Amino acid sequence: MKLNYQSAFRFQKSFTLVELLVAVAIFSLIVGAATGVFVSAIRAQRKSLAYQEILSQASYAMEYMSRALRMAKKDLDGNCIEAKLNYQKTTTGIKFENYQGICQEFYLEGNQLKENKGGNISELTSDNLKVKSFNIGPSDSWDQDDNDQPRVTLFLTIEGKENSEIKIQTTISQRNLDVKY
Image (cartoon, rainbow, N blue to C red; front, side, top):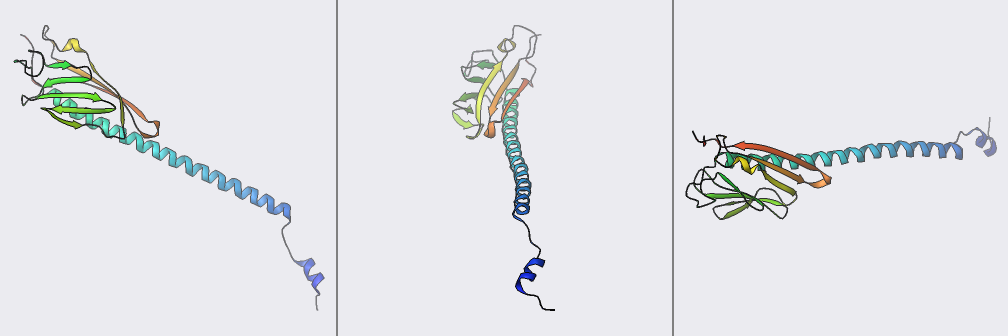
Protein backbone atom coordinates (compact mmCIF):
# COMPACT_ATOMS: atom_id res chain seq x y z
CA MET A 1 0.00 0.00 0.00
CA LYS A 2 1.41 3.29 -1.09
CA LEU A 3 0.80 6.43 0.96
CA ASN A 4 0.86 9.86 -0.47
CA TYR A 5 2.23 12.95 1.23
CA GLN A 6 -1.09 14.13 2.66
CA SER A 7 -2.02 10.86 4.24
CA ALA A 8 1.47 10.46 5.73
CA PHE A 9 1.15 13.90 7.29
CA ARG A 10 -2.12 12.94 8.91
CA PHE A 11 -0.55 9.99 10.74
CA GLN A 12 2.47 11.90 12.18
CA LYS A 13 2.28 12.65 15.89
CA SER A 14 3.35 16.16 16.98
CA PHE A 15 2.91 18.62 19.84
CA THR A 16 0.57 21.54 19.66
CA LEU A 17 1.72 25.03 20.48
CA VAL A 18 -0.23 24.98 23.76
CA GLU A 19 1.47 21.74 24.84
CA LEU A 20 4.89 23.21 24.05
CA LEU A 21 4.14 26.37 26.03
CA VAL A 22 2.94 24.32 29.04
CA ALA A 23 6.07 22.14 28.90
CA VAL A 24 8.37 25.18 28.68
CA ALA A 25 6.55 26.86 31.59
CA ILE A 26 6.84 23.75 33.80
CA PHE A 27 10.51 23.35 32.88
CA SER A 28 11.13 27.04 33.68
CA LEU A 29 9.45 26.71 37.07
CA ILE A 30 11.54 23.64 37.95
CA VAL A 31 14.81 25.30 36.83
CA GLY A 32 13.86 28.53 38.66
CA ALA A 33 13.13 26.67 41.91
CA ALA A 34 16.37 24.68 41.65
CA THR A 35 18.34 27.87 40.98
CA GLY A 36 16.71 29.59 43.96
CA VAL A 37 17.61 26.72 46.26
CA PHE A 38 21.18 26.70 44.92
CA VAL A 39 21.62 30.48 45.34
CA SER A 40 20.18 30.35 48.84
CA ALA A 41 22.55 27.50 49.78
CA ILE A 42 25.52 29.51 48.50
CA ARG A 43 24.40 32.56 50.54
CA ALA A 44 24.07 30.45 53.67
CA GLN A 45 27.52 28.95 53.08
CA ARG A 46 29.08 32.41 52.65
CA LYS A 47 27.42 33.65 55.84
CA SER A 48 28.57 30.55 57.71
CA LEU A 49 32.15 31.07 56.51
CA ALA A 50 32.01 34.74 57.54
CA TYR A 51 30.86 33.75 61.06
CA GLN A 52 33.59 31.12 61.24
CA GLU A 53 36.22 33.72 60.34
CA ILE A 54 34.95 36.16 62.96
CA LEU A 55 34.74 33.48 65.62
CA SER A 56 38.21 32.19 64.82
CA GLN A 57 39.85 35.61 64.98
CA ALA A 58 37.86 36.76 68.00
CA SER A 59 38.74 33.57 69.87
CA TYR A 60 42.42 33.99 69.01
CA ALA A 61 42.48 37.63 70.12
CA MET A 62 40.61 36.90 73.37
CA GLU A 63 42.81 33.92 74.20
CA TYR A 64 46.00 35.86 73.45
CA MET A 65 44.93 38.85 75.56
CA SER A 66 43.64 36.58 78.35
CA ARG A 67 46.94 34.74 78.57
CA ALA A 68 48.92 37.98 78.72
CA LEU A 69 46.60 39.61 81.29
CA ARG A 70 46.54 36.45 83.41
CA MET A 71 50.34 36.59 83.63
CA ALA A 72 50.48 40.34 84.39
CA LYS A 73 52.14 41.45 87.58
CA LYS A 74 51.77 44.42 89.85
CA ASP A 75 53.87 47.38 88.71
CA LEU A 76 55.67 48.17 91.97
CA ASP A 77 58.01 50.86 90.53
CA GLY A 78 55.46 52.67 88.37
CA ASN A 79 57.61 52.26 85.23
CA CYS A 80 54.68 51.21 83.05
CA ILE A 81 51.52 52.26 84.87
CA GLU A 82 50.62 53.92 88.14
CA ALA A 83 52.57 52.33 90.97
CA LYS A 84 51.05 49.35 92.77
CA LEU A 85 48.34 48.69 90.18
CA ASN A 86 47.95 45.53 88.16
CA TYR A 87 46.12 47.06 85.18
CA GLN A 88 45.47 50.57 83.97
CA LYS A 89 42.66 51.48 81.60
CA THR A 90 43.71 53.84 78.82
CA THR A 91 41.43 55.86 76.54
CA THR A 92 41.38 53.05 73.95
CA GLY A 93 42.45 49.92 75.84
CA ILE A 94 44.33 48.43 78.79
CA LYS A 95 47.96 48.71 79.85
CA PHE A 96 49.94 46.51 82.27
CA GLU A 97 53.35 45.14 83.09
CA ASN A 98 53.73 41.60 81.81
CA TYR A 99 55.47 38.75 83.63
CA GLN A 100 58.78 39.62 81.90
CA GLY A 101 58.62 43.20 83.24
CA ILE A 102 57.81 44.62 79.78
CA CYS A 103 55.14 47.29 79.43
CA GLN A 104 52.32 45.88 77.31
CA GLU A 105 49.09 47.41 76.04
CA PHE A 106 46.06 46.15 74.12
CA TYR A 107 44.08 48.89 72.39
CA LEU A 108 41.65 49.71 69.61
CA GLU A 109 42.97 51.86 66.76
CA GLY A 110 40.54 52.61 63.99
CA ASN A 111 38.78 49.30 63.43
CA GLN A 112 41.64 47.06 64.48
CA LEU A 113 42.70 45.57 67.78
CA LYS A 114 46.43 46.15 68.32
CA GLU A 115 49.14 45.30 70.81
CA ASN A 116 52.06 47.45 71.91
CA LYS A 117 54.63 45.27 73.63
CA GLY A 118 57.72 47.21 74.64
CA GLY A 119 57.35 49.56 71.67
CA ASN A 120 56.66 46.79 69.10
CA ILE A 121 53.19 47.26 67.65
CA SER A 122 51.35 44.33 66.10
CA GLU A 123 47.80 43.76 64.89
CA LEU A 124 45.61 41.17 66.61
CA THR A 125 42.79 41.26 64.04
CA SER A 126 42.95 41.25 60.24
CA ASP A 127 42.00 44.06 57.90
CA ASN A 128 38.84 42.31 56.67
CA LEU A 129 37.28 42.46 60.14
CA LYS A 130 35.96 45.59 61.82
CA VAL A 131 36.24 45.79 65.61
CA LYS A 132 33.27 47.96 66.50
CA SER A 133 33.97 48.14 70.25
CA PHE A 134 36.59 47.09 72.77
CA ASN A 135 35.60 47.72 76.38
CA ILE A 136 37.37 46.89 79.61
CA GLY A 137 35.88 46.71 83.06
CA PRO A 138 35.29 46.85 85.95
CA SER A 139 38.16 49.15 86.96
CA ASP A 140 37.12 49.03 90.63
CA SER A 141 38.38 45.43 90.77
CA TRP A 142 41.98 46.48 90.05
CA ASP A 143 42.71 48.37 93.24
CA GLN A 144 44.26 46.65 96.20
CA ASP A 145 42.17 48.25 98.94
CA ASP A 146 40.28 44.99 99.35
CA ASN A 147 40.97 41.28 99.65
CA ASP A 148 39.70 40.43 96.16
CA GLN A 149 42.01 39.07 93.52
CA PRO A 150 42.47 41.63 90.68
CA ARG A 151 40.36 40.72 87.66
CA VAL A 152 39.47 42.32 84.35
CA THR A 153 36.61 41.74 81.92
CA LEU A 154 37.09 42.25 78.18
CA PHE A 155 34.15 42.95 75.85
CA LEU A 156 34.56 42.78 72.05
CA THR A 157 32.10 43.44 69.23
CA ILE A 158 33.46 42.43 65.83
CA GLU A 159 31.80 42.77 62.43
CA GLY A 160 32.84 40.80 59.36
CA LYS A 161 31.74 40.06 55.83
CA GLU A 162 28.13 39.31 54.94
CA ASN A 163 26.86 41.58 57.78
CA SER A 164 28.01 39.01 60.33
CA GLU A 165 28.70 40.22 63.86
CA ILE A 166 29.81 38.62 67.09
CA LYS A 167 29.86 39.88 70.67
CA ILE A 168 32.23 38.11 73.02
CA GLN A 169 33.41 38.68 76.56
CA THR A 170 35.71 37.03 79.06
CA THR A 171 36.82 37.71 82.62
CA ILE A 172 40.40 37.10 83.64
CA SER A 173 42.03 37.08 87.04
CA GLN A 174 45.75 37.02 87.63
CA ARG A 175 47.44 33.70 88.08
CA ASN A 176 49.69 34.86 90.93
CA LEU A 177 47.85 35.58 94.15
CA ASP A 178 48.11 39.32 94.72
CA VAL A 179 45.93 40.24 97.70
CA LYS A 180 46.49 41.75 101.13
CA TYR A 181 46.53 39.51 104.16
